[in-house]
Length: 120
Image (cartoon, rainbow, N blue to C red; front, side, top):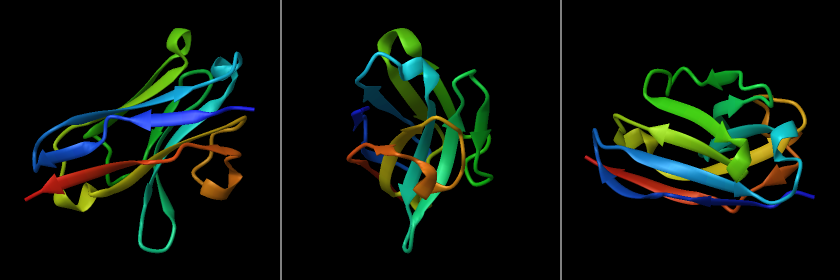
């Protein structure tokens, strides 16, 4: 069982930065692939992911602006978001599972979400 708690969301002006954190419970955090998703009108949209080995993936819409990282000693995954745009506004979720995938329904564990609002 893994519990995930996101933090770091908030209100920022366009062009600004935020860093999201996702703290995980459990002793096997390092074995999990971690993903960040955001709520789109009809589904949760893949934003970025990091495998247990540290391989990273990004959606085209955030490539070059967002950076995912993990600190296994702290059981935490981060999403550094730079050059934020109003269209980045939504709820962001972290997720965990054994295999990194861009498909949200493949993830077994989810956090509660954190709101990111980018004003123009």
